[in-house]
Structures are given as C-alpha cells and as structure tokens.
Image (cartoon, rainbow, N blue to C red; front, side, top):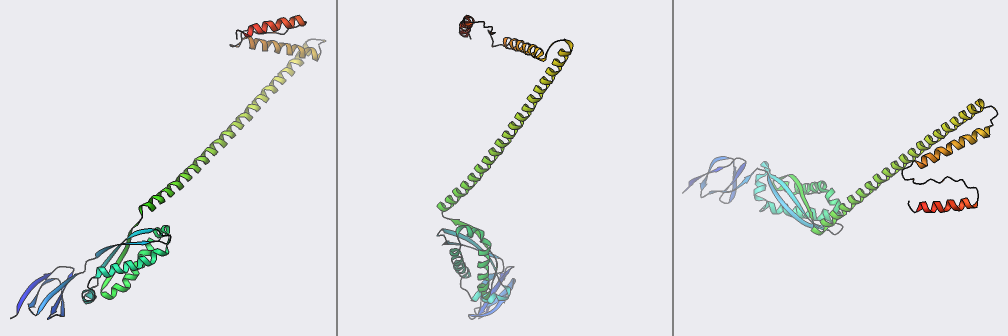
Length: 281
C-alpha cells in the first residue's frame, strides 16, 4: 500500500530523496511529497554560508608555542549537491584536518614575530589548500581568516617588556636630545649676551676716552701755560674724589679710609683705626 507523505523545503535549502535506498532526486524549496514506504527524504542541505572555527596549537621556528584561531567560511555548490551529501560523512571534520595540516606545516618555518606579519600569507595558504580539496566534495571555500594568534602568557609578558624597554629607551634619547638643544641654545644666548655686554663696555670706555680727550683739549686751550700732564693729574684727581664719594654713599659702607700717610706713625695709626672699625662691620 502506497501512501503519499508531504513535506516542505525551506528557501536556500535542497532536499535529497531516495527510492528503496538509492538516490532518486533533489527536491527544491516548497511543498513536495514522497511515496511511502518506497521513497524517503533522507536529508537536507543548505546553501547558506556556513562558518567553522578551528584552534590550532603548534610551535614556531624559535620554539615558542602558540594557539592560532582560524575561521573558515564555506558554502555548498548548487551544481554539486550530490557530492556534498554523499562524498563526505562529516565535512567539518575534513576541513579541520586540512587546517591542522597546513598550519602545522607553515608555522614551524616562521619565527614568532614573522608569524604576526605573515597572517595574510598563512590565511591564503589555508584557503588554497582547502579550495583544491573541498571543491571535489561539493564545497566552496569563500574566505579563510586568522582571527587570533595567542602565544603563551609568559611569552606575551616578555614581548610587552621588550616593547616597553624600547619605548623607554627612545623616550630617554629624545629627552636627552631636548636637554642638549636647550643647553646649546642657553650657551649661545649667554655667549651672545656677553658679546653684547663687551661691545657696550667697549663703547662706554671709548666714549669716556673721547670725553677725556675733549676735556684735555679744551682745558689746555683755556689755561695758558698748562701742560698735558697737569690736565691729566687734574682729571685723575677729579675721578678719585668721585670714586670716594660713590663708595662713601653706598648703603653697606660705614667708614671710608682715605690714605694720607706721611710716615711710619701715620701708617700704624691708620692700621689701628681700620682694625677697630672692622669690629663693627
């Protein structure tokens, strides 16, 4: 007795029907039926993009163990539904095995730093290996991504310390260079200030000499019979008294001694007076 059995296939799926244990036909989305007990819906395949995540633990060329997380995005080929359903019992296990094979063949040839730089090359190698194998089984490999490279915790801490030391060394060098520039500029500024100060003192002295020269000439012309030595003595005496006045008018000056020695007794008396005045300073 034959009984029609109805069923539905969702969009982006295909059904596989067998008659008496032998493949009969593919059923497209929508309402369909099989003749029981001779026919049977034995399975469904989806055309949606599927994702498989694989974690591979291996070591690098410099003997550092790390775990690589690989993500594979794959899809059933519409023209190879028969192969996708009947060729493989567990397609995810097949994909995982190929990922292990490629990653454990590639990573031991690279040092740890080179592994992080070669993520794109490693992902491309995995994709090429899977595409060549899985296409024959009715699966298309759309994309392969290496989403994470996780070394041992102690290795990561060591790498962080190395990077921190490099950055600290660079910062110290930059700071030292800045201090050097500051000191050079300060020295240049000090040298320029001293140069300008010297120029000012030189101009001041030149002006004084010019003024003295003018005074000597005017005095010699106004006083008949005077010699140049007389004029110089008078100028020096005037400057001497100006100096005594300026020293005596200073705030910290209490006693001013003007030498007027005529003999040994005067020198002795002046010494005693100077010693007494020093007690009150």
